[in-house]
Image (cartoon, rainbow, N blue to C red; front, side, top):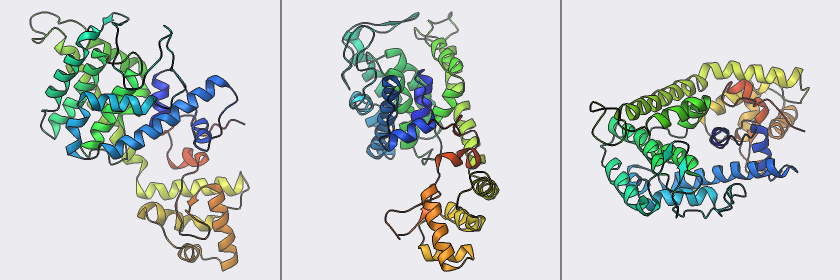
Length: 344
């Protein structure tokens, strides 16, 4: 989901079904689309790797270090086939700080010779924020200020967003259940507008003490916190235990009546149990929950595995809850726009 939304913010749109195909190495014959698929996979792999690397409060200082920022950029782009060469013919070297000055629209980034100094100041200031509310405010402000520094020739936006995701993860605020990336992508014009307004010069003597607008930065921080709250509330509604049972029921009805698959309604109780528990269970226990005879229940489990509603690490092994891509519009409506779109 995060790779989908990060691509969307950058204007490099990929559909959920295209990402799912890429996960099983089924890339498009269209060179441009295949490159976007590769970039989506690069994001997924980078996020998984970095979440393990930067886990817990002890990782906060590392994430605010120059090496931490370079690490994020390196993991994102080390296997990327997209944006390897920019419009100026420059080769993107993963993890390398920029070696020339840049101007983006009205924003003139700091001279490349001073990038290290700015990053050191950025890291020392925001890493000193106490855990709790101050740390969340620091995460929001650091996102914008990292973009203002613009430490890399390309890929800064992706680094900024993944840094914020990792920072919330390190502080234990997300537990893998939500991310601000979806909120940023819901209105990209608003996202970029708040970023740009915080880049503005100080607007008079009452607008803070630095060279940049304090009002603009405060507005940006408020926007980020609103986005985070919105995503927490959204995912809370998506993970409602009782509503999930009715969603599963609607999905199974669709499977049996529209898709004419071998998935039966008798699997509802077992699937709902697996969703609630988050555990693996023996196939025999799942059969008991269906109330069916052994042979019919065995065939049903096979159909559920083929359809993706059940996952298992080995043949005849324990089963756990699965979420096939075509079920998303029932189980998690509005999580991924276009989730029900399939491309032949």
